[in-house]
Length: 329
Image (cartoon, rainbow, N blue to C red):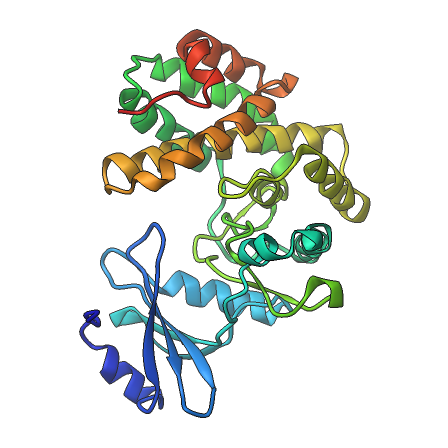
């Protein structure tokens, strides 16, 4: 029998769902837990428990409200008690884009086209009232690689040189970023819900956006097209990047920024996935590191990444890089 969090039944009763059955849903890499409420009538809702102090549900509520007000498809908020970490939302169902594509590979092009078009719509909006995705944030994230991956791989690396290389490489991007756009930060096939078939142009729902910042419009493109959890072919990546550029515009500088943020995000993810294993005892993320590493190696070939590429060449042995990051102890 699964133990329910304290206060769940009281919150559900206050929200008017005391007659609903409670079905736990497997979680991912955080302290958040999810439950589906199901009434005999067939009506459902999604219950999220994001308990303080480990989690803070207020950013989710803020971003969801902003997205909805600006025509984006975030789940409607049915009830909330942010102080206790409870949020009851509209239920988007079970069809995550990734899962749907596992069963319908012929729909890949259509699904990704819609995901690109949603980004174009988001980037047509002024940036939301969110913190800036600025250089200190970028550097804090890239630092996860030297903080977690390097020692786990048994490497002693030049951390000062690493930070300096990233500062040099990212400086032109920061200058071009300006006020930016709303960056959801985890926009990929596991966080896009299909509310119908992409062949019918059904809308796609957004989830897991509570960490949104105001940053560069290439970031969520990288998140989608260099997916850490799903293989996206280079051919599809190129086609979807071209679709975005046709609709939203972009030049050689934008392509440089795409490569920069690809390497930045992938370096961060290598560090995060290592941390999930070493600190949190979640080894399943190790199997994803080679995919992320190989994408990062492609990004590092862009001339805009020259100082960072030189650091990798000097600090990460070639045999580890060829193995997609090598073995982590």
